[in-house]
Amino acid sequence: DAKTTQPPSMDCAEGRAANLPCNHSTISGNEYVYWYRQIHSQGPQYIIHGLKNNETNEMASLIITEDRKSSTLILPHATLRDTAVYYCIVRGVHTGANSKLTFGKGITLSVRP
Amino acid sequence: GAGVSQTPSNKVTEKGKYVELRCDPISGHTALYWYRQSLGQGPEFLIYFQGTGAADDSGLPNDRFFAVRPEGSVSTLKIQRTERGDSAVYLCASAGGRQETQYFGPGTRLLVL
Image 1: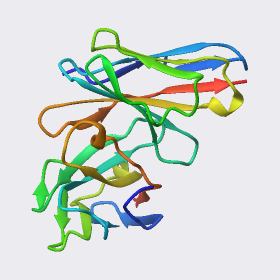
Image 2 (image 1 turned 180 degrees about the vertical axis):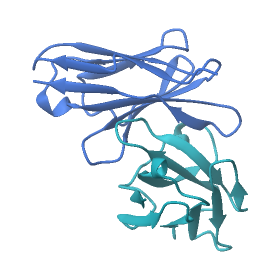
Image 3 (image 1 turned 90 degrees about the horizontal axis):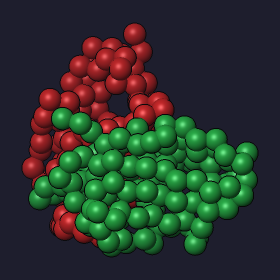
C-alpha cells in the first residue's frame, strides 16, 4: 500500500502557483519523498525528490515540513501543459530491492486558462 | 541523451497468445524495473533487475509472466497464454547513480481480445 495520501484533484489558473499537498505521516528517517507526474498517455515523469531539506530544480520546488510528515510540491507558474496526475511517493534511501516505487492514485491537477 | 525506450508502443493480441515486450534502458543504468498500469490506477511494481539478475520479482502476478535481462541492458517481459485481464500499459524504468532515481519509458499498451 502507498504510504502517502493526496487529495484526488485540484485546479489552478494558468500563470499562478500550484501547491500540491501530500501527507506521509508514517515516513521513516531513511525514506525519501519523490514526486512524479503523468501526462495523459505518457509514462511517469520524474520531477523532484528530497529527504529533509527543501529542494528546487528547473521544474518545481519541494517543501518538506520539519517533522517530515507532509510535503508540498510547488509549480511556481502553472501552464496548461502542467495538467497531469501528480504522484507523491515515499521510497527507501537504500538502493536495491527497497527502491521500488509504490504509487497511489495521485492528485489530478487541472490548469485552467 | 536518449531516454528509456519501449517497443512496441501498442500491441493487440488474442487471448491465449504469447507476447514479448521490450525495454531499452538509459545507457549505463544498472537497475531496471517493470510496472503495470491499469486504467485509472497508478503503476504497480512487477519486477526489478540489478544487472542481469532479477533481484525482486514479488510483483509478478502469476507464472505466466516472466522477464529476462541477459546482458544487463535490454530487458524483455514475456507473457504466456495471455488473458483479457492482462490488458494494461506496461511501463519500464531504469535507474542509476547513487540514489537510483527511476526514469520511465513511454510504455507499451497491451490489449488482449
